[in-house]
Image (tube, rainbow, N blue to C red; front, side, top):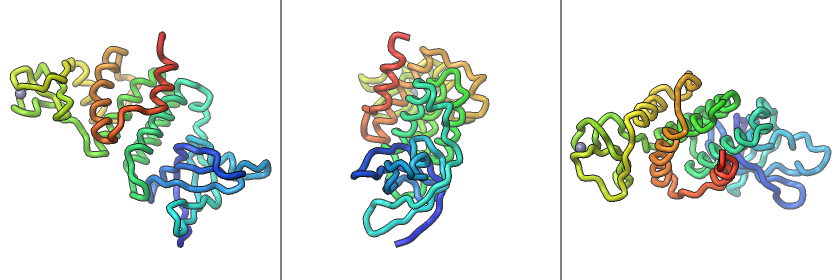
Length: 248
Ligand SMILES: [Zn+2]
């Protein structure tokens, strides 16, 4: 049984018992965890606003014998209000959170993922093309999870492009090497943008041109790798996101 303080970002929060909330937090030191915030649905609760989704806070937690931690107190540092007031940005932010929750084990330190997610949310707040930030986030998260695609040569012969992306091997394959039947073409422009995302992350992302067609090509690749890394392809937040962007 122990108490500790830690920075954490609220990935998700849902009603629990009569007056509590179950809060999924990505903390800096202890990674992903679920905590109970007691009494936060009562009118006078001070903690209530500090356990809203996308809040970055400094929390005091207690870990008892159960796998659930208890959130004792919190100080909100950033509510990411700009994201909460724009449905499209909010849907992207929720997708980033769902990807983290789905891909990380509980109670294991994940400092690089924590930093990446905070950077992604900050970038998203000023982003005019949220799809670009989403592709950049996906690839960098995949890299941290150990699924960084090799993009500078054919996976089999190390030769140059043009390339196809081969889902079973999770890499680029040149036209001379035999790829599987599921392999699909990836343009040189898409490869160049993916390399840029992996080398520079969110640094000066606003000057990186990523038209919708390129974003679509890159998403096809990242979806395959996410399925390998996370073990699933359906994300509730991604469905919400698609329902918002369809027809635009
Ligand atoms: Zn080859």
